Amino acid sequence: TSSASGRHDFEDPAKKEGRGSGGGHWRDLRGDYSNIAILLLLYTLQGVPMGLGASIPLLLQERGASFAAQSVFSLVSWPFSLKLLWAPIVDACFSERFGRRKSWLIPIQLLCAAVMLCFADTFEGYLGDGSSPPQVLPLSIGFFCLYLLMATQDIAVDGWALTMLAKRNVAWASTCNTTGQTAGYASAFIGFMALNSSDFCNAWLREPF
Image 1 (tube, rainbow, N blue to C red):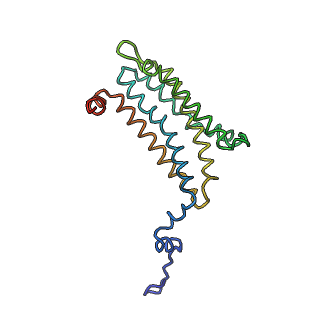
Image 2 (image 1 turned 30 degrees about the vertical axis):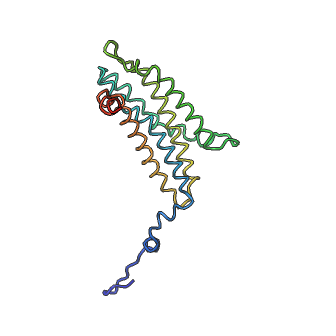
Image 3 (image 1 turned 60 degrees about the vertical axis):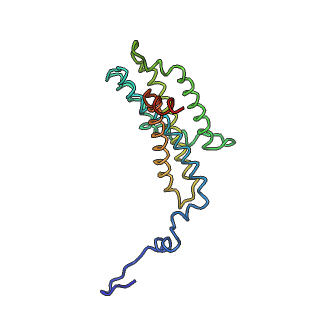
């Protein structure tokens, strides 16, 4: 279009098309809705152990753990900083019969469930009580394994997103990552801390029923 001063104002045809058709961005997602739902689910599952891990320092402090012990537990998140080291292995090693990404995702989820089940009976003991101090080392080892599994899953899901989504929708992978991980992290952190609080359980779960 031309203005009165003779200058030409150019408008992006994609924006013009999107405005006229009710939003081109959402229309471009047709055919990828199920893929985005899968990515959101995987990233949400990925955020759950991270949310549980974030609640542990608060419980350790409440139960008298020293700052040195809490600093040891802070090392459990290192796998996400170092995952670049084994990312090529995740991308290159797989079973063609089972699938490039499923070769990693399904075993990782099974191992994650196994670690959590193993922790179920001993978790309270590791946190300690009034008579015994928290056992930070086994807690750190267990959550380090969970973070290692989730970092490996992150590699596999990120790579899968590049081939799962249409090229025009690849940018949505980062949105799914942020949204899913945040949802899993927040739900696990808030849910665990709430259920661990006797005041919350007495006020909202026991008395009403």
